[in-house]
Amino acid sequence: TTEVYYDDDADEAQLADKTVAVLGYGSQGHAHALNLHDSGVDVVVGLRESSSSRAAAEDEGLTVATPSEAAAQADIVSVLVPDTVQPAVFEEIVDELDEGDTLQFAHGFNIQYNQIQPPEHVDVTMVAPKSPGHLVRRNYEKDQGTPGLIAVYQNVSGDAKDEALAYAKGIGCTRAGVIETTFQEEVETDLFGEQAVLCGGVTSLVKHGYETLVDAGYSPEMAYFECMNELKLIVDLMYEGGLGEMWDSVSDTAEYGGLTKGDDIVDDHAREKMEEALEDVQSGRFAQEWITENQAGRPSYTQLRQAEKNHEIEDVGEKLRDLFAWAEEDSESEDDEQTR
Ligand code: NDP
Ligand code: MG
Ligand code: MG
Image 1 (cartoon, rainbow, N blue to C red):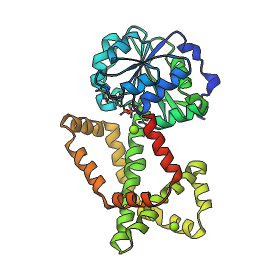
Image 2 (image 1 turned 120 degrees about the vertical axis):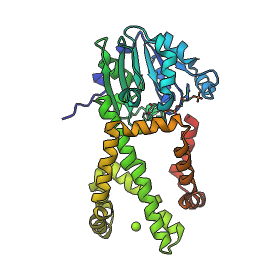
Image 3 (image 1 turned 90 degrees about the horizontal axis):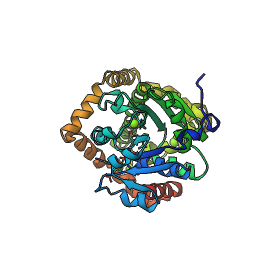
């Protein structure tokens, strides 16, 4: 069985005389910087001069420098700017990486697809909370943890894994539990999951369900509630207790209908398409497409984003969310904005 690492398996002494440069102060960056700082670790945040995040970091009492200044001071450089800008930021800091320093990531894309070639004299590790950054911070403040992954790609010092575990402890991940993976496995499962199930699959399912009802003459409001709003309740049950708890909680009619129709709708064709998506991830075809898309100024991405914004379900949903009280969700999204 998979080994899970907790607080007792991690030794914060690994970070005792080290400085961590956190490059970027966005979703993950602010959470790592603040949690490490509160855990007593010496942190410097690396941001470009023009950065809109600079004031937020300084207001929290953190030291802010440029990425290269921060990397020069640091023993561990945690690269938490967006994946698409990491190769450029890496070029700015690569000369500051000394023998035995650590280059660290929260996602393996640029290493796995050779967009960053780390020098041979540094450790290369990953500490990846399995959660958006604002939750990593919020959980830490509530003395709770966020599950996470660690991975070692290059181990020059011999201590790469212990140091990664100490970092995971510093941001609160070992409170909840951490498992070890590889850069390859993290990247391939992450990209597949977000495409096939989490982001791509589920939005497509919601839109097709909504359109089917509206095209058949049902009211957009009913279609919204049925196909989008209730999804949260179903997902919460699966999150808490797996498929079983969800099936136990819905009516027998819902369970029978779901069990008979679900696999008929998301059928073998969908499964074949999932395998194709996975192959594109494994072969690097998807990565190359995304890199090329960025180099071209994101033409298709911009168009797809706009089309998604223009979908009728977004208008209907916005009006309904204003009319009804979703107390918990409202406070969460406010919280989200404040912590960014
Ligand atoms: P964000 O998009 O939130 O990062 C924004 C930060 O990066 C800002 O501080 C921004 O500052 C800075 N930044 C943007 N462009 C540049 C640039 N050209 N030079 C210097 N700084 C720049 O990133 P995420 O936190 O979403 O992602 C960071 C890493 O964490 C990625 O590898 C991602 O895959 C991984 N990850 C993300 C998760 C998430 O929940 N978001 C979950 C797990 C992993 P400025 O004001 O200068 O623009
Ligand atoms: Mg991802
Ligand atoms: Mg129902």
